[in-house]
Length: 117
Image (cartoon, rainbow, N blue to C red):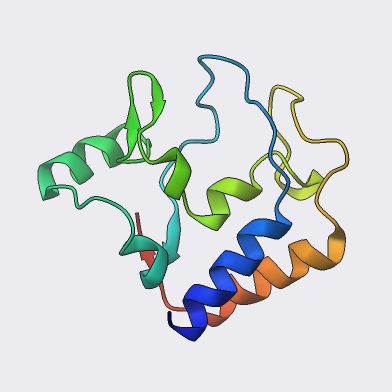
């Protein structure tokens, strides 16, 4: 396992989880992620990517929600877990992510080459 894969696993463990409001996909827009996280996701065609972007959706958003939920990127996992990226419907874990953990996640994101999901 590469150094970044170890970091990704470690950082994912620091992000608390919570249940979204059923049927809500308000935070499922186009995002970027590291190439390591991108490699874990199924490839989409150019046409699928363009169609998703046209509606400002994530290419992995399906009719019933995220089709890659278990492997979703760290940025997606952060939505709703921090006041800086609050859930528009008021959902979130209790307690929220520790500020130090959030800072580590953002530092990792800033230190890696990001690609559009």
